[in-house]
Amino acid sequence: QGEIPDSLYFLENLKRVAKCVSVDDSRRVLTGVMVECREKQLTCIATDGKRLIVAKSGTCKAKHDLPDFILPLSAVRALQTMFAGIDETMRISVSAKWIILSGRNGEAYSKLIQGSYPNWRAVIPANFAYEIKFSGFLLRWATGSFPKGISEQYCTFTVQKEQLKLEFIDGYTAIHYDVTIPADTHDIPEDAVIRFKPAFLADATIVGEDIVMRWTTPINPVILCAGNITYVIMPVRIR
Image 1 (cartoon, helix red, strand yellow):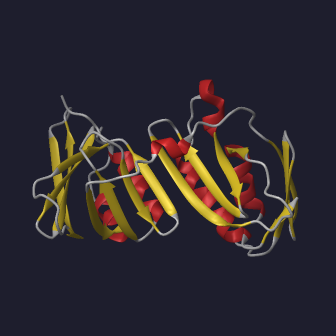
Image 2: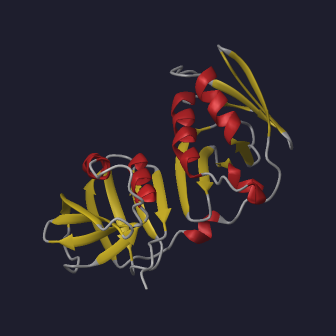
């Protein structure tokens, strides 16, 4: 048992990472949000096997660290409704199969997803060759400005002098659309290219406003982070 002083921040991060849970029921443990408590620090994790998001989500006051647990997506959504906009100290109790969260609006009970969660730390690269900084607001604008209703096979990032060029290319309809945003490209080779799935790139905007992107090669995992949130995606390989 324990208490979460900043429950609003915790619930907001639950909602953020839930975008990356899997919809594949054959991998049941990936269909929920993993929550860890280490030295009183709460961390929310989600992955669908193609991307990963990790969010440090405040503290938990308890005599001992809570056991790790996997919260079903349905429970994440129910908590957003039940405790929407309420900033309070939330009480939490976790057993092997159940979780109870309680606040002024009442108590929420949920079964937990059983199973061993993958070693997500092994997915995050320890070293990088390049780093670029740009605005999450402008990335949100850029990804939202492309035409709707096309299949959008991939989006290309091309590093240019003091800017980042984004191109959406659709091989089925031959639609080509591009936009540039300012970026800190110091020490980055010009014309360096990385390709992403458009939907995965659009979700990167959930990490925050001042995004730092780190990578080594166009085919290795790429990290986008801001503040306490880290988002890892695999680039698209073009043969």
